Length: 169
View 1 (tube, rainbow, N blue to C red):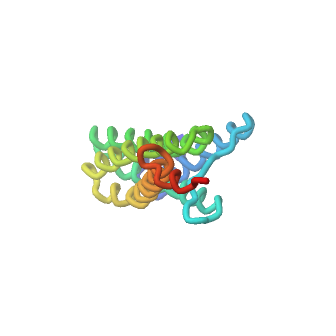
View 2: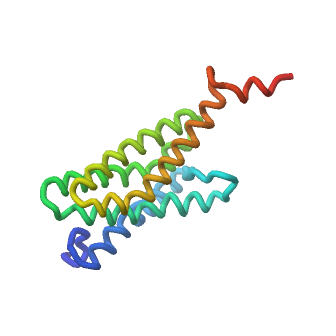
View 3: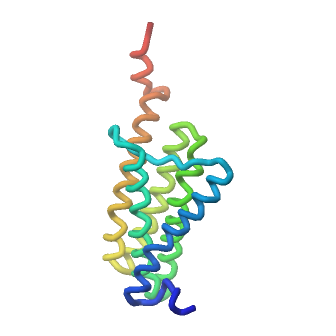
């Protein structure tokens, strides 16, 4: 089945590499829905939830393309590719795993995923700087998500609970 080889270095390989993470998300979503779990997407600034879902899922093809760009570049490229695969797995599982968490734990998981993503981006950038640039929009969205989540969590947690002290009687 060489036709379905996502590592082939032509246009079809790029399309397969970009589409494969979305296909895995569709499968994960189906399994989660069968088990009664719904994904939770970050949608800031009063935007509808579907906008957050589109932005979240829109990074998966970028990460797939970046993995494709580095995968055929020797041992360093394969290692960077596995880092990107780990990042994609985290991005796919994130909306399902964080739904039952409180805001602080959700923000900490988002921060941990951001750290993995930055590590993957650094490894990919060492192999092919263009791959890191392809990952940059997704990393910016993940960084914004982690920053906003931690900001809100800190605003409602001691000792920073400035907003809690203003809700008095």
